[in-house]
Image (cartoon, rainbow, N blue to C red; front, side, top):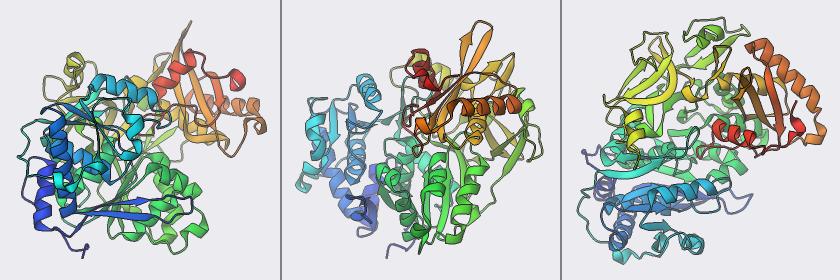
Length: 566
């Protein structure tokens, strides 16, 4: 029954209006399924809401929230991943309130960020579940537990007049988290853009995801897009994925025309951690799109994942490198499913000078990058970051975006809003990139550039060299950055060692010598410091990316032991 193509929905202004539409048009179709894994060996316990049940729950919780706060007040979502999160988010929008997608207290490594966001957003109400009620009540006087609101509280609600739907707090990779004001129109537009880009507007898909719902990509791909199109969304907890990545693959295999997204590390993690026994009876030939939104997207990651699961029927053309950011709701540009991965080998020295010139793929000084396709219903320009002049194809500059999905600005930050969102209608992303053969290629971030002797170096290039030099370096868990020195900028690398190896088992001086030699030979850069640190000590953002800015702060504060320094 659920494989039937859902009928097209008329255009509505907000996500709750779409929920109400699907509840009337297809009441018994499955809307959201959460797959819980209560034990290490669990194959998954499924809980499902039909569109009718979702509509009832949304209207009930919305009515309860409307009793607690005035229209326009902020509501912090401190729910665990699951159906209550979906319900709480949509109910907040239905009540004309502004959602602040977050997570319960106690999430490892995110305590300071949670405190900072709550202080900035100043929510009037916190939404959670009964399981977390006690700890959440310490943070706010008004708390609503979604699972304690009875269905009987449901009542018809008028479409909300509020313009802002939610505050999407940035992951904090380069600055203190800031709340992007995402309007109802923004999120509906971006959901439609994503559906079109990945072919889900023309053919039914099942959205399968473990990305956190407080993260922009998880929110749009697992809630907004399915709601707009009336698709089934299957969710699991990020921790369940980390404990056993095969769980994600089994969900992909179990649902027709599955579409999913994950950061770069997840594809490498699956390729290395999923066993041959777990691959038995795993069929991935029904997967239609696997989105990788890392910056930059490297072809090697897709190649390793494809090599690991080609025997399970995975089609190479399912890999979809994409580009996006919270300030544009999330999706900006995407490679389309069904097309071969576009690969670009670029000369590293020319790239440092702002030119994307071709190189031989086997040249050790080549940078291998994947094309992120074409814009999804929006305009993308490459401009000189100083003068603002438009650049020609093949020239590297700042990526700027214009479209109906671009947010309104930052919550209570007028100066930063003017600087980033501009006065010309273009979003100044702070990301560097170029266009080649019609493909957007993301090369790095302006604020992360390391300048040594007048030459630009992309930290992710240095990091790629370091992690390929020695097997004890944990992939995608290292940061390269510059610090001020007496004779110019000094380059530092802080890298975690693998979990399977203790520091005592590693010949650290030999590893450091090998890393120094590799970076010097390939990049012409002398590393001032190389630190090997325990797993989990290189800070990451809420989306799982390494935070170079925070790693640099901790390094300068002397937070890392000097055992691995050389």
